[in-house]
Image (cartoon, rainbow, N blue to C red; front, side):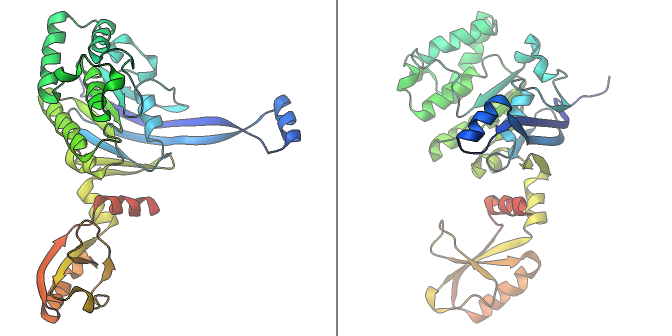
Length: 327
């Protein structure tokens, strides 16, 4: 039997019909009798496949079509055209076997009941997914080891901090041991420690279970820590599918040279490259230089200026992706 990728997407499209009308009373009355619609293409002929155990970042600005795509793949939305197979199921047929094999966790939506302790929501999920007691206890124990859930279980969800709630949300979505995870902004709003904790957990969970993960995030640290491959969607179209480092080379074939000078403000660096601000490192001044010119520019800097320290780095992935969108 031929091998099938866990996630296979073929020319998937979603178009919304949105009512449009002009302002004013007359237009309001006319639209009451005959409403005009315009087509908004949320996703346009997107195709990709993801192999077993891959963690793939799904990136794009707000409104690019990321969440719409995840909702189609998890069966919440029907596409306008095109197809998808996840674990050989057609998602929007919503077969029980499919729903037991995948999970969708949305950082901005609650799956836990607000007024009862998280433990009760977990038991409800056990009943919904018909998880046998021994299997439930084993899975819960593993998730507790990774996420330290036990101290949170008896508190009403409304009393949990955002970071605590996200831990419980993610754990609740994994109690049935899904083989495919769709994660929409799983670290949104968390502080740096909370984000790092969720990232460590997802990596560990992926390594332990071999689960396939498709992840959207605004935090590039999530993507660089978890994903070797990224998909970029913009205006509903897939613009890039490949490695993060390959994207950096294609879109931004430049390096950043950071120099710490004896008298930082007295030297004009414009003759060496484009000076760029770097709020994370105020001790150095940074210039952007084409990758092929790095050796020559570095030599000139060392010969011309009183340099205490010099570093050469790749551009931050945020600026790389920003350039990708502009192109």
